[in-house]
Length: 348
Image (cartoon, rainbow, N blue to C red):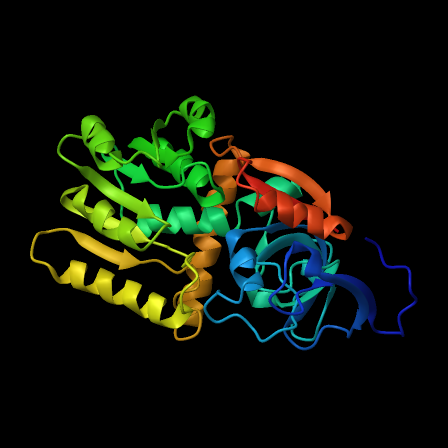
């Protein structure tokens, strides 16, 4: 999808994908509009790559906490090149490749962003590979190192080890010297073994017993994106001193807010039990409103660490496909098909 219209002086003609409401993959709309010149503290970014994650799936169903009112432009993160800067922004940023978490707005050819929210990206890195590791990489890195504080010699359990966050989690955990057990469908087990993971079928009725066979005394950390009944099972598999980190996206069809409050209450109750184990919910956006400076500092530090590991070859991004924005229906259908390993990257 490209834009050929002539924009008024000082503006930029862009193309973008709009989510008009709760629709199927065929309900997205393509539109063209103009963006104004960057305001004070802003930069204009020409987007090189964005992507499809479970967050957009949840938003399409109206089930992502805090999502904007319909209609809006989805797109959780992006990689691009700064083409213009507003007043108060260092002009040296112009021409620089940057990455940003946006939560929405990434499925477009251009975006206006706060200069304080962009992170420099080495130009030698592939934009699609960087995009694949933005939110998933930051989420995995912070859960592993800031929440669970996994160390060499420990054993961790990663649910959905073949997913976007899951594949990054297992690579980071293995790099940290941990032993990794990963749940997934059997069709992904060969790929997980190649990464160095001990795979377990997540459909196995005796999944807990299979994990216990691999970790008799329990695991030191569990990363659970499932929620619901899985929380109790994950908690039961923890060793003494272990940590349960939930980042569940509420996949059931019940009322969203009560389900989310119930999840948080369950985790808080588990965390209060006097048995030396810990439980908590992880939100990659945690602190961005109340402590924005600390949030941005950690984002810069941790994302830079992830990109360094990418440059060093420690992290191998799992890209399932690269598709243009104009093929958004097919791209979303593929991303939600449960038949792929890795992420679908969108290229404007």
